[in-house]
Image 1 (cartoon, rainbow, N blue to C red):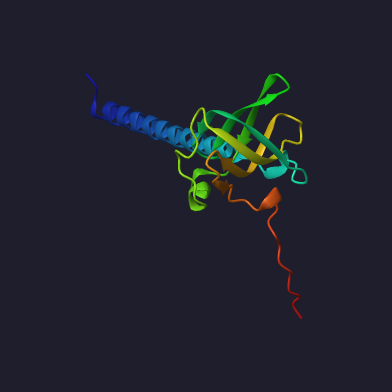
Image 2: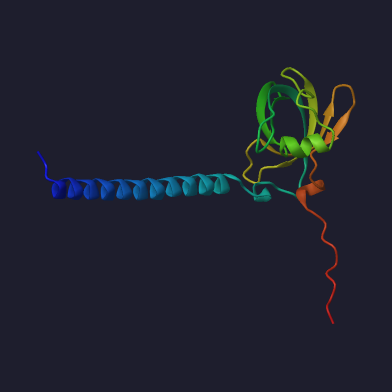
Length: 159
């Protein structure tokens, strides 16, 4: 049987262990959240992947349409001299596309579409969408300015 002093000391040690454990849980939780934020930030890229000087027009059949964040993707089979080339076309976010008139069901697998895009700088088949033309003649833009370059106004000089 423990004396009162032994019980008090055991309780203090147990309390200290709980405090240390809570501190470690807080540190690990903060670290995990930090990793998540850093991963999300590094996963997003700039428009530097795309050649904004050149534009390519491709016509083909949609094999897949991903209406997902952070970007919508159109996967397209394009016939070329007896073969089929597979293009991956990146679009703006669903939020941006919705604001410029898109709906999640505007493109379906099997649809024939013509896409104007800024190609990848690497030469990989695909690029960033500028404009889509549907079989019924409708056109929708990507919500980004042509060539992916936002116009900049003149900077006013402060006197």
